[in-house]
Image (cartoon, rainbow, N blue to C red):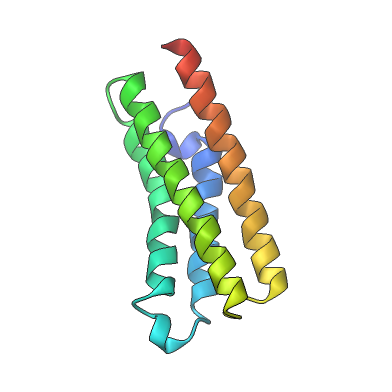
Length: 120
């Protein structure tokens, strides 16, 4: 039984992904502090934040809408990770690890969204 959004596995994985993004962006060049680093961090924060926000809404329809916003942030993260790798801000192993975690959250978000849509 879920007591709150923190009990959701997708929120937990999204939160962990966010922490890992913050850790990885510490090593980005200083000139990216307000650029790619900031964008990637904001997209990372958006994933668990929108899952939590949606969970707290009154209707399933609203919840699903916030999950879509979270999914949009996953798409942003994917693009930004590719840029970070191609600009050599992330080494290949860091990219592979973050990309794998991002894909896991993406799959979980899709599954949760589909499950909730069946209920409406």
